[in-house]
Length: 467
Image (tube, rainbow, N blue to C red; front, side, top):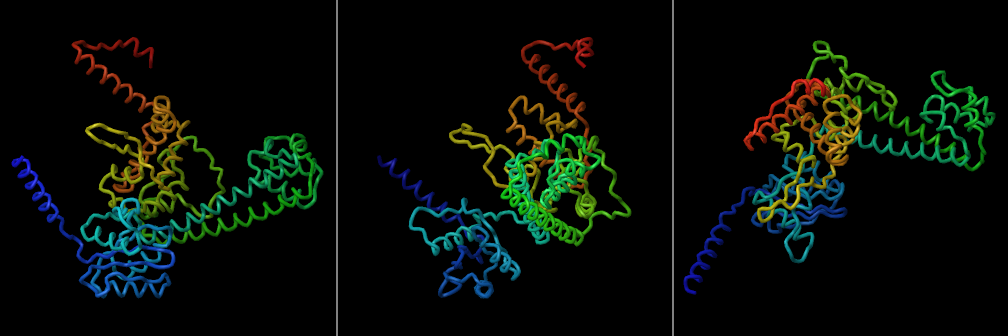
C-alpha cells in the first residue's frame, strides 16, 4: 500500500510538472465574443485595470475597440464565427494592423460551468494565449470581393429559376403544353410566344408561327400544344413572373459586368499577347444551357491563374470561376494536396479508439468549393475521359454517392496541383485508364500467386480476344 501511495504521489507530481510545461505563446492575445448588439472583449489581466469590456456594434464603437486593443499592446485577436456579425469586426481590426483569427465555434466550446459572454471571451483569450486555436481559412481581400459578387449572382439565378417555375406552373394549369414541344421555355421561341400570349394573342396557329427555324417541332404540333384553357388569373401570374424573370436577368447581366471589372483589376500571371489562350482540347464539347456572358470569362481566368482549368474534365468556365472565388489563387495556404482535400471534407476521416477504426467516412463539412467539385464529378458519368472511366468504375463498385466523393477528391488534387505549379492538364483518355487499371490488376494477381507459391502465366491469345 505504501508503494502504491508513493507511486500515486509521484504520478501527481509528474502531472503538475506537465501542467507547468504549457507556456503562453501569444502574450499579446485577446478574445472577442461577437454578438448582434454588443461585443465582449478580454485582454490579459495585466494590461488594463478593466481587462474585460463591452463595446457596441456601431462603426464608431468598433474603432474605439481597435484603439483600446492597440493601447493594451494586443497584436493578435481571436473571435468566433457568429453568423455575419464577425465580418465588420474582422475587417476593421485587420485594417488597423491586428492579426485576427476566425475560429470555429464547435472547436472552442467552453468547459462545464456557467456560460456567459464574459466567460466566453475570457476562454477565447486564454486558449489563444496558449496557441491552441487555429484560424479558419479566409482568402485575400480581392478574392472576397469576387466571392461577394458571385454569391449574390447565385442568389439571383435561384430567384430567376423560381420565376421560371411559376411560369411553367401557370402554363400547366391552363393546359398549355409548351414544354413538350420546346426544350427551353425561356429560349427565343418560348419568350416570343409568352410575350404574344400576355399581349392578348390566343390563336394557336399565329403563336406557333413565331417559332425559330432551329426548332424541330412543326407548326402544327406547336399549335396543338398552345391550345389551352386560358384563365385571367393564371395569365396575371404568367405576366408578373415573366416581368420578374427579365428583371432578374438584367440584374445578372449587371453582376457579370462587375465581375469582369474585378477580374480585370487582378494581376496577370500570363501575357495574353505572348502566351495566348490555346484552343480547347475537349472533344464533343456540349453546349452550355447558360446564356453567353458579355465577356470572355475563360480568357480572363486563364490570365489571372496562368492555367486553363476548363481543360479539366467536368469543369466549365462558371464552375472554375466559382472555385477561384472560394479558394483564391494562393495554394501555399495548404501544405499539400492532402491538406487541401481535408479542408474540403473530401477525404476519409479516420476515428480510432482503442486501436480500432470506428469509422472512416468523410466529415460533414459545408463548403461551397466542395459542392462545385461534387457537381463536376457527377457530370462525368458519360465522359469519354480518364476521369469518366474512373467515376464509372467506382460507381459500379461502391455506388454513386461514394463515387462522386472519390472523383471530387481526385478533381481537388488536380486543381491544387494546377494552381500551385502552373502545369497544363492533359487528359490521357478512358482507354489509357482502363489499360493501367488492367495492368494493376495483373500485378496484384501475380503477387498473390507468388505468395502462395504459384506462377501466373498470361495467355496472349486470350488477351487478344479480350482486347
